[in-house]
Amino acid sequence: MTTSLTQNERPVIATDVDGVLLSWQSGLPYFAQKYNLPLEHILEMIQDDKFIKPGKLFGCDEHLGEQLINKYNSSDFIRYLAPYMDALRNINKLKKAYDFVAVTALGDSIDARLNRQFNLNALFPGAFQDIQMCAHNESKELILTKVRLKYGSRLKFFVDDLPHHCQAAKRILDVPVYWMVRGERDGFADDCTKVTDWDDIVAIETRRQEVSKNLEVIQNEIERQLSPHKAWQTGWPPFDRIKNQPESYRNIKPSDLRAYYGEVK
Image (cartoon, rainbow, N blue to C red; front, side, top):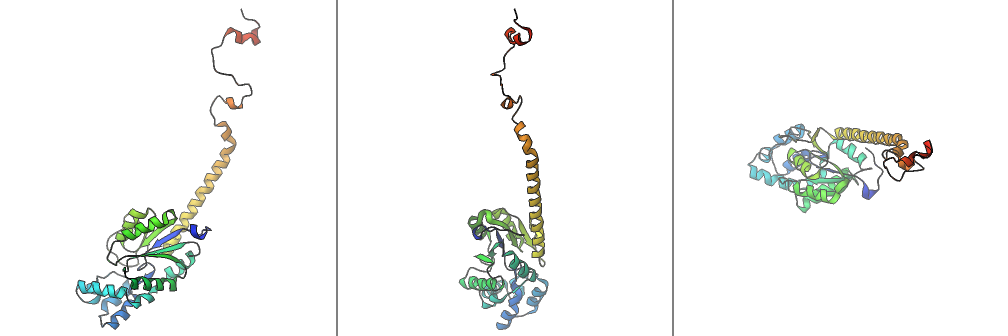
C-alpha cells in the first residue's frame, strides 16, 4: 500500500480505536484495584478479548456498571492503554502514505477526548489528523456522517470491531468496511469484509491495488493497440479520406457515362 500524493491530497483511513488499535480492557485491572472492584471477569476479558456486559464485568447491576464504564473512560487509565502489536506495526508504516481519522465511542467528555488523544499520539505519533467521538453506547451514525462530509473521496476504507457500527459505516460512507474480530462478537456485519487484524487488511488492500494497477496497464495497452486504427472508425464510405469527394449520392444519368462510352445519345 503506497501513495505519493501531497499532504492535503493523501488518502484517509477511518478506524475505530478500542478493539481495533488498542486493548480497551488493558487498563481495567488498575482501575479495579483503585476502587476495590472484582477482577475475575476483567482478567477473563483481557485473555479472550470477549465482550462482557458492564454489570457482569464489575460484579454489579447494569446501571452501576454503565456508570463505572463512563468513569473508566474518562479516567487517566485511558492514557496508557496497550496497543495490539499488529496495529502498532502497521499504522506506523501506513502513516507515511495515509492520514488516519479515529472514529471512537469512548465518550463525549473533554477528559475522554484528551486522554484518547494522548494515548494515540504516544503510540502512533503523527498518524491521527482527527478524532471523532461519541458516547460509548451511542450510534456512530452522526460522527460517520461528519467524516464523510469532511473527507469525501479521500476516504478509502473504515475499520470497526462491532457489527452494528460496521453496518452504519457501510450505509453512510460508501467505502469498503472491514469488520475486525479479535475475539467473540455477537451479530454479523453483512456486506463487510471480516478480518482478524491489520495484517489481513494490508494484505487485502495490497492485492486490491495490484489488481487496479494491472487493469490500468491492460487498458492502456488496449488503447495503444487500437490507436493506429482509430482513424478508420469514422464510418463508411470513408469520404473524409477521399481526395475527390462526390457532392452527394444521386441517380446515374446518361451524361455520367461520357468518360467511358463517349457522347451518349
